[in-house]
Length: 240
Ligand SMILES: *Cc1c(COP(=O)(O)O)cnc(C)c1O
Image (cartoon, rainbow, N blue to C red; front, side):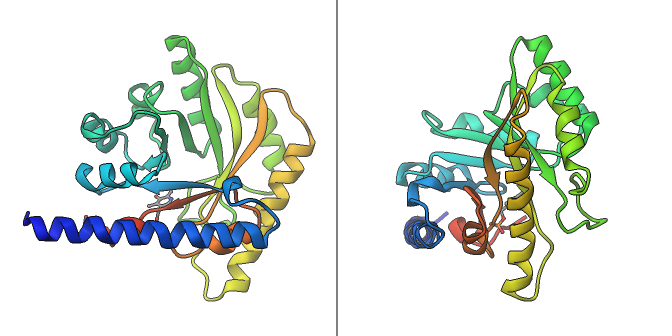
């Protein structure tokens, strides 16, 4: 690709990153926290390694990839020293073997079955996998994730599986027409998060509440998110 275009995109990513970090800081302060209390995840799916590396140079220290194959395919080109890697997409049972031990966290654990598989493979590899549980907060048929109504029992059940450790929750809320509507979903997530945290279950540390993407990360932070996952607002529109 032409050098000028690459330079332009580097510049855009830089400006986007500053803008987002500033918004995150403002939202954190508004919600009574420090800017550093909210972690920024750069979502790198479909993005060329060249641009991901640029973001890493700018200081992004946490990335999320959706697909096992895509991540394993491009990670050798990435400057990942000191960078935390999460798998954020829906994970299929037959991919568990390939990803366990290759990322720092598996964020989208959305069934007891997949949790058991991750536990089984982790034990075989002699490690403990860090995971987040995904809640389908809008109860949408089209989305993966646990039912919020039975979350306490679910966390209980999954916490007893060997080879995994629950670090918190994540969600992708429904598409909403207005800010009030989406904030209600985030608020409900925060309530569930606090509820589970208060139970102080063995093998469960409710440290991470991952919610908010390009279109709604400030609302998510205002409602208690402490990790936001931003792709297109950082790297530009995705080209599949
Ligand atoms: C793609 C993706 C994101 C980022 O989406 P943007 O709207 O581009 O910020 C966040 N979380 C998950 C699970 C994703 O798949």
